[in-house]
Length: 86
Image (cartoon, rainbow, N blue to C red):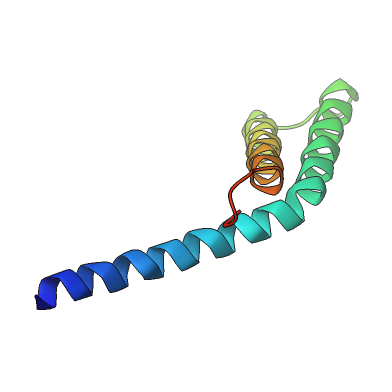
């Protein structure tokens, strides 16, 4: 009996955490999209300039831009979902 209540409490805690994360992603989705676009644009500009950009930094900036865009899309999905929790 004790294990069920502990499992239920753990489920409720995870559910509150997931709802809170969805709410924050929904709030920050547009900002994350803008940040991803700016990072991608700056990477493009740096790579096309005569000075160039170290390869590791270009990869890092492209990865950051990709992560920002993916998180923005998750936030848009959370914002426009039909369920009450997100």
